Amino acid sequence: MSYEYPNTHTPFNKNFRQAKLNGDVLGFVDDPNTLVREYELEWINEELEYPIDVKEIGKIAKNLFNELSTKYSINVLPMKFVIGKTRGNKDGIYTISKKIQGTDIMKLSAKQVQSIDFESKIGALIGSLVRYLKEKKINQDQYYLDDIVKFSQFLVSKEDGEIYLVDNDPSLMEVAKEEDYKDNVEVLIEEIKEIEEKYGFQFNQYKTELQELIQ
Image (cartoon, rainbow, N blue to C red):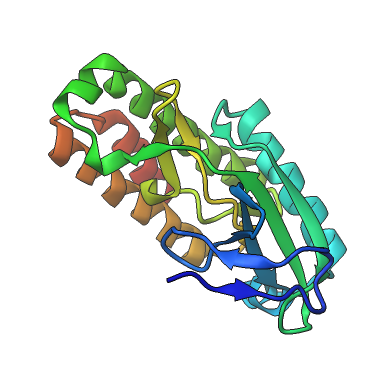
């Protein structure tokens, strides 16, 4: 069963459809290869101590995703941010990206693991995420993306075997909020342990570095 949503209030001139993915992911009725995610300003701001306006959130989020790609060598799907009213007529942001065919990181076959040198690639991703969290704390940057420490946010592309960040939530977190930062570090440690258990890899050095961040 598919659902079609009118574009009333939104900045788009074509109707949405429910994408065949987990979560509240939309697409355009006439474009099955494009994914649209809708975020209300209120939802983004609820984690921040000092709320910021929707244009500033869009600017910050765009810069943070660009940073992941250019500074930390994390493959981020090309996307664009569109500011406008949500379907519920509230201030919000839309992210628009192309759909890729891929496999969940935790569901690779033994053949896939070997053919794409998955151990090396997941190790590089973990290293980048560890460095990201570490440098955000050292530099005392104001914001970071807190939703990228879960491997469920990534897919292994069937086209080129690379790992891509596919969830582009503009979910901002303030580095100064120590408990939330600690939670993110602990989540990444647990994610690494699951990878180790699933595939028999060992990333002890990265786990140690993360533990040192929250001691």
